[in-house]
Amino acid sequence: MEYSQKVMEHFMNPKNVGEIVNPDGVGTCGNPVCGDLMTFYIKVEPKTDDLNSARIVDIRFKTFGCAAAIAVASMASEMVKGKTLSEIKNLTRNEVAEELDGLPPIKLHCSNL
Ligand code: FES
Image (cartoon, rainbow, N blue to C red; front, side, top):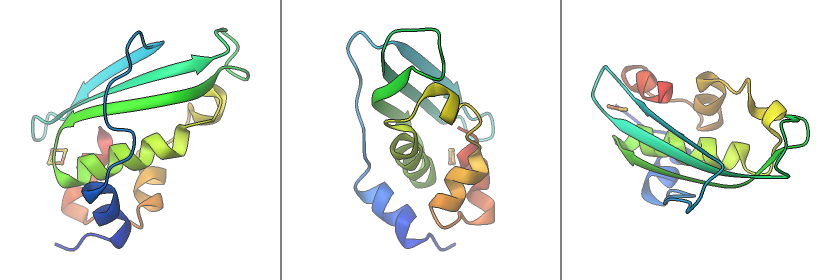
């Protein structure tokens, strides 16, 4: 199994790891295939229900996951930071995997997180 250079970079030096105190949103999910867990924290400005205006100004994650899961979380966090909620609401696991220059087929399920 070979990982791309980008996967290795994000695994070895993940971006946006950690937790936000008093976040505007928290989401936790698990991968039933392997039992891995991931939690994302976001801070949004301005505080509004208008998805076209509310922008992610900070994002952090913690994961109990494999190398691919760490790389996916790191890349996803970079892809959404600074974007409005409407810009990111349709982001797919495939887009994140593509941005990482692909994942080995056996690790594609990790991008579900
Ligand atoms: Fe569990 Fe990758 S093996 S997320």
